[in-house]
Length: 263
Length: 73
Image 1 (tube, each protein chain N blue to C red):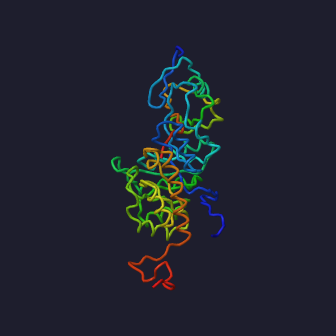
Image 2 (tube, rainbow over the protein chains, first blue to last red):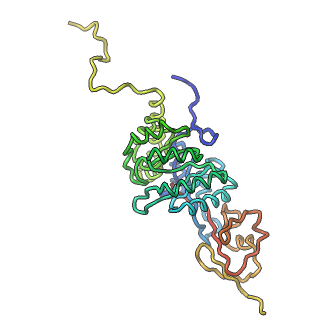
């Protein structure tokens, strides 16, 4: 086994974990933190929302449980339906996080399916990259759009496996494979993973990482599922690096020697 | 002309009235118990950096968005 360090590199920064997790939908902040710890994730997504005005001074916040100096925050544009809204949100995020440049861009096209609007996504990506953001971009599994987003300057391409929050797994591994083969920046599956085997398959396809939230947060035991996902990502990555055997319908080559049989 | 005795600001979509008519953004942050919290503020569509909070005086009708980071995917 090769001992070479296998890191995920995004915008010139190395990460040991290839699992990126969201911080939404948990029962409480404590569960959020425990799940993140079990997942081993270093990059975590957060949403930008209006502050609750008139809150108690001591009211706990996500930041108390998941301190920004321990994790790499990835502010997202979840809930944005136009390029303008997405850009506005991430400018606020940069101010909020003291000039932090790494962001997740997602522009949605339909409230029912949460399918991405790639036209608005392309527009927003262009503006953000001009303004110096490092843009990890959520998109459909269209290889042409993925390439276009890379050409604009996105630092990671994140196609969906299936719809956000659906847990349907990887519906089109062939498209993902085309995207991965043609990309010079990391490709990460974002959205649609339902269970550990989905994450392992994404990694076996050659994805550089997986971003998920609901698969962990909506499991009966989120903390155990976070641990399962960590292992699946590692196993899938190693299987990809190891290189799988060729598939064949049957083989006249048994695993045990044919010599020395008792008779 | 009589000096105004109160000032209305639209904060996160809601109109709020304040007695202090020459309040800075920093003053507002203190009044809202948000001092030291990790927030970002947009005034009338423009982001105001933290270092400017003490220099900018709010005016009747100003629209403010005050945001923070919350859990999300």
